[in-house]
Amino acid sequence: MLEFVARRYDTGAVVRATVADGRWQCFEPSREQQHASLPWLAPGWVDLQVNGWSGIEFTDRELTVENVACVLTAMDCHGVVRTCPTVTTQSHEVLRHAMATLARACEEDSQVADRFAGIHLEGPFLSPEDGPRGAHPLEHVRPPDWDEFQRLQEAADGRIRLVTLSPEYEEAPAFISKAVSTGVLVAIGHTAADSRAIQAAVDAGAQLSTHLGNGAHRTLPRHPNYLWDQLAHDRLTASLIVDGFHLPPAVVKTFVRAKTPGRTILVSDVVGTAGRPPGRYDDSPLGSVEILEDGRIVIAGQRQLLAGAFRTIEYGVANVMRFAGVGLEEAVTMASLRPAELIGLSDFGFRKGAWADAVLFRCSDDWLEITATLNRGRLVHGALSTSE
Ligand SMILES: [Zn+2]
Image (cartoon, rainbow, N blue to C red):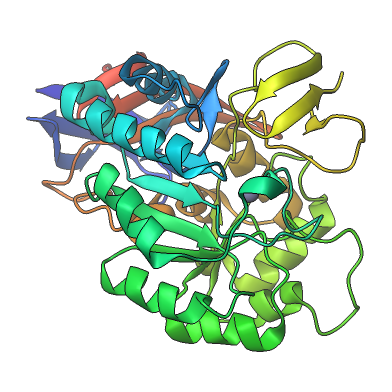
């Protein structure tokens, strides 16, 4: 049994929350009046795009079960309660190893199983064009191949929950229909698709645009283009990287207003290189990358093409309030309930009997300070306030 007091992110009310057997029991109104010092309480973050952390990449021919546990538990102090380990474009052998290792990690390590929201396979079925392809290695980009996907899904023991692909290939609609019929969420991303191909992808069941506005050409026809097509489509939710580097504030604001907060989710897209000192690194799965003095991670030899992010998702929650003028409840929902719903997490949110997955934080203008994280009712980071 666990009891603590905090301010609910949605109502602003100070509540005494009770947890038993890892699940919410109740949220009772608290007598606490001096609540300014109490942290906010929200459902924990669900990050659908984490490539790795602190020198570990999931897309690695030497990935181990220990590596997987390392990355997922490192997310605790950032308020993340569920993660989609993201595996990016590589040879079939490397992808297969990553899938098998992630599956084994879920079976062998309860720390992983508790934090795991399904594998995100981002690639290899992406656009070969420079710009949309981003940092994915050209030699491994290929058209959607259902047989290959099935072999990967088998290696993952059915744990691939999200696949990002480009619908510009003629094989795409059939692939998408099959994936959707097996319960896999399909996202459009790293694409050079035209309006017709985007519509065909949505008709086949695609529901998400992966990091809309990134993984795109440097210049585009003013209209039509794949940004307008995806922005305008009410059946597509958009994931955005709101780290302050991937999209300018005006673009974040415009995208959120076009999609509406209900159709916007936040992802971090953090990569394994994140957290290392500035310099050139040739050991990244995306080839040679460079960490600049300001922390940006770019493909080596230029300054425009970003190769993943280094800021965890709580930055996005703080930034989206500032950039897009949305309130705390909407910003929190974009990083928790909406991604949880998209990926099909059951037992999530503030309901009696749901898993007690929560983040507690203090909020300043441009920063969230995570004070505690609860994962399935266990305090995995920080401390709780128990007094009224
Ligand atoms: Zn990407």
